[in-house]
Image 1 (cartoon, rainbow, N blue to C red):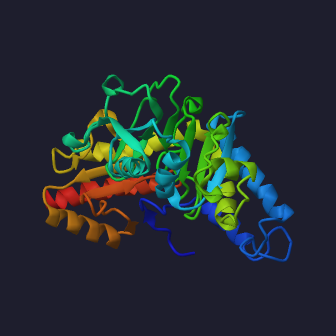
Image 2 (cartoon, rainbow, N blue to C red):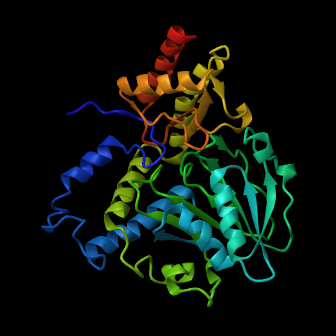
Image 3 (cartoon, rainbow, N blue to C red):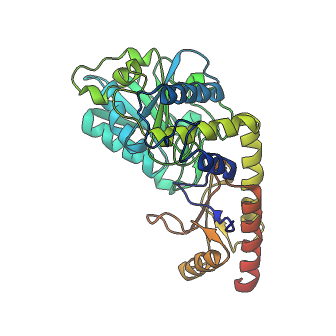
Length: 362
């Protein structure tokens, strides 16, 4: 077998090797039916079983045994930025947004197109280095919802608390942090995430919505955009990405088998600490982009003394079997995305490479 790359891609991202191997075994013939899942009807009993089981697995791992439904949708998290205000932002109400990075800004921009939107708090003036404190949040009581991005993929920050919003529904974009640590999921009226980071391959987005919020029946938008319609049809209103959902099913089983969300958090802290220790122990050769109390355990971002050194770092890293370490094109620098399927060994190898690179170039 070809040596596996140290995959730090920000998404689509690493998948567990055993999940890939399991899918490979069943790729041509799924459970003896004489067809691949990529050929199967989404109305078949085989797929309906996968559809239902995957929904229940995700609810179980999130600690949401009742009162919520899982929807499988298309368009990525970016589609949700628009679909949320279309469904929930009624005339006379305000969509409230906590702005902590590029993706929360995009969500806010979509909200402003649909209706009235307001910024609850923003750390943009501080170049995203630290996240707003709970005491910084000013929520308009006329808000239809409060939207937050719990982990900022590009910037490399992560909330350590869940805002208290009272009776106002809290909506969380958890695309790059879902299942990375235990949370009180019931504090959210809606959680959504593109699958391509912690849940599986690209092609499907999950929206976990409370039964209370699903009572909203926006008659002014097409059926295909209504959450309530997808819920009534168990995510089978239109043809779902069958194979992507099957892969998510395998990943969720892998998470459960390997100790669940608590174990994922422990491993993620250990992995990210390897990289952060290399940054903090470099005497300033590496500088973290985010203050220590706001750092993400999923996306570690840092800079080197010059852009020339950063380019050299990325070039040499690729020669040493590392993939995906260049920072997002909008901010530059270096970014290591160590999602759930990235093994400890990859982060250890990265920390060792960082130390060696500094010795040769510091």
